Image 1 (cartoon, rainbow, N blue to C red):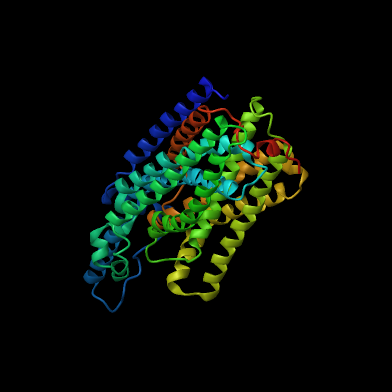
Image 2 (image 1 turned 90 degrees about the horizontal axis):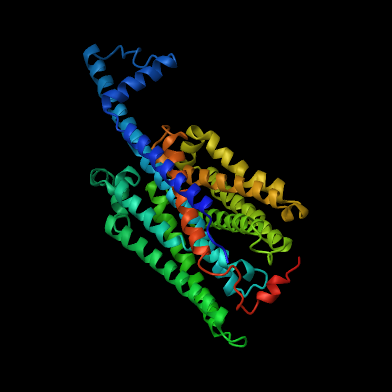
Length: 440
């Protein structure tokens, strides 16, 4: 039985406190005025040798030209001010969603194992159940941040913007605050109910008679039903919580794209936590073949994610429809490093590291690939949110690192607390003997 160590508690609490302090400092420093922004823009222009406004229109009166330029400068400064204000909110939302999606990806993987009656994975069920404990608190935090941030992240929550935007007005029956949060609570309610009953039946199976598999059969049935519910609600969640940040843009592939990201991130965290517990001598029933299969899934879903990324990008690029290409134009022009760096971290690195079958059994190879995958998919979420909220005022500073540290510490506390509540082996599962003897 695992007991959460004092060292892990202390490290997690330090991450939460330091992260909160860093993010708060960034939040306080983001409250700049229009005049502050004008000074900042003037300094930036001077440093780049700019001469904005030096060439006047010869056919217009000088006073009119000056007045138009002043008005334009005021509008630009106000726009940049809003982008600076948005950055701490967006950084917090990116980190909150990233750690939530890990737990949700694990929940889908867990449901698939039960629905398919997989024989290799029952020795990993307690780790999966511990990670999925974060689904409810993590999801509620995402919704709470969305509610608090409002139009700092979702411009369609600003009545003034909606009043002057016909396209958003046409989507108002779906994109409105009450219905947005009602849908979010429905999604979380369904996912959390499945997680609660599935774990309940899993634990009950441990104490059942050796020939009594009723709880396992219940788990099989609710897992099959959950996966149907999940595939619809995950897509709608992706539209609401991520895609609606850019309400003028849409992709019919987006739900699958986000699913692939959360799925591979979740499987990676299962592998990392399993290896951590095994290194403590607590999961001797996990062998190299289990690690090999987890690494195989990390490799395969990374390829699947890349296929979806390329399909979405290539079709939009080839069609060259203005309302679609603007999404990628913004990211390629202003986010070159994170946009293409993400592709290297999420595809090239795991492809090269995990392609060899023997490497999939070596823990430090899996750890190395896993860290790259998790960093890459954090940057993926970052690329989905930041261009729409902060434009070219992006960066990786106190707001981003503080938010990641805070949610990492919280995630560790919640997950390892849940893992410590039950023995690490689901001994009552009818496939557990096959799983313990699994050999690839």
